[in-house]
Amino acid sequence: MAALRFATYADVPALLALWEVAAENESRPSDTAAMVDALLARDPEACTVAEVEGRIVGSLISGWDGWRAHLYRLAVHPDVRREGIGRLLLEQAETRLRALGATRIDAMVLEGNELGQTIWRAAGFAPQPEWRRWIRPLP
Image (cartoon, rainbow, N blue to C red; front, side, top):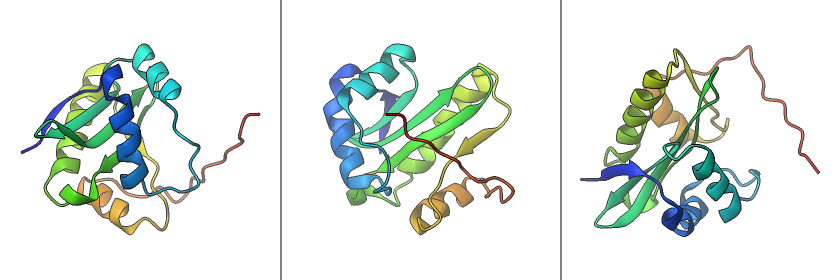
């Protein structure tokens, strides 16, 4: 059974390694240790990790800006998928965000990520067809 806890600075290398093998988005911006450190400095409870026998096998970032609640980096190592780890991470994130005042949670899921869409649908999420994500990289 996986144990959940908030990520620490010591976890950053393991998180980056997990995201390399478990993240489903090749076009996402590169993750860096400095970016994860900045997240943890801003909100020490934003990133939850799942551990099995001391090994980080899952993660979920639950972001709250005081207005909107967003979920990022739901990742479960391929070796332990379909064991309920994603569901545990989502339940913990919902509890955290509700306590902070959130009334709605959103998550971005790639159109072609069938595996990701399966877990989000199972958790009660649905696509919002009237919205399209617009992006602009900063130099």
